[in-house]
Amino acid sequence: MRSRQRTAISNKPSAVSRQPSAISWRLAPALVAALAIAAAALPSASRAQEEEQVGLARGTAVRPVTIEDLDGKPVDLSPYVGRRPALFEFWATWCTNCAALEPRMRAAFQRHGSQVDFVVVAVGVNQTKASVKRHLGRHALPAGRVLWDSNGNAVRAFDTPATSYIVILDRQGKVAYTGIGPDQDLEAALARVTR
Image (cartoon, rainbow, N blue to C red; front, side, top):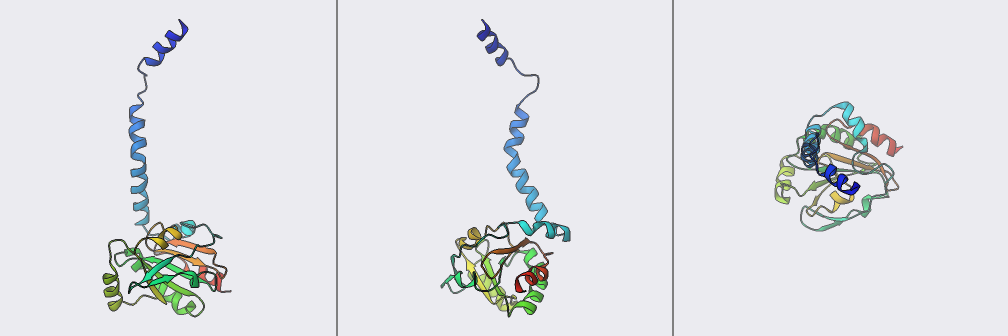
C-alpha cells in the first residue's frame, strides 16, 4: 500500500511547474554567449586589467604548431617559443578592437621590437590571405611577421577566445601575459619580460 501511495504522490502535478526552469536551462548557453559578445564589445580600462587571465593561464608552456605565411608556405612557430620574449596578436582585417589596439601595438613595437618577436596571426575567419595582403599593402601592421592560421592550429594551441587577443611569452616560452581588447597595457607586460 505504501508504494502505491508514493506512486500516487509522485504522479500528482506539482504546485511549482518545472517547465520554465527547463526552458531557461536550455537558453542559458545562448544567453551566456550573447553576454560574452556584448561584454567584449564594450572596451574599458578596468576590464583590460581583469582580462589578463583570458585564454591560456600564466606560466603555461605553449605548444608550438605549424601555420602558414601569406604565400601558403608552412611556418613552424618553434623559433618564436623559448628563445626570446614573443608577442602574438590574433588579428583580423574586420576586427574593430584590433584597429583600436593598433596604436598601443605600434608604440610597443617601436620600443621593444629589437628585444621581442612580434607575430601577428591572421585568423582564417571571414577573411582570406588575399584580403589580408590587400590590407597590409595599404596599412602595414606593427609586427615582424604576419602569418595565416587557415585551419585554426594556432587558435587552438593558444586557446584564443577572440580577435585582439594578445599572448606574451617569456624567454622560456611560458605565458607571461594574456589580454583582449583595445585597452591592454602592453608596455607594462613587455617591461616584465624584457628585464
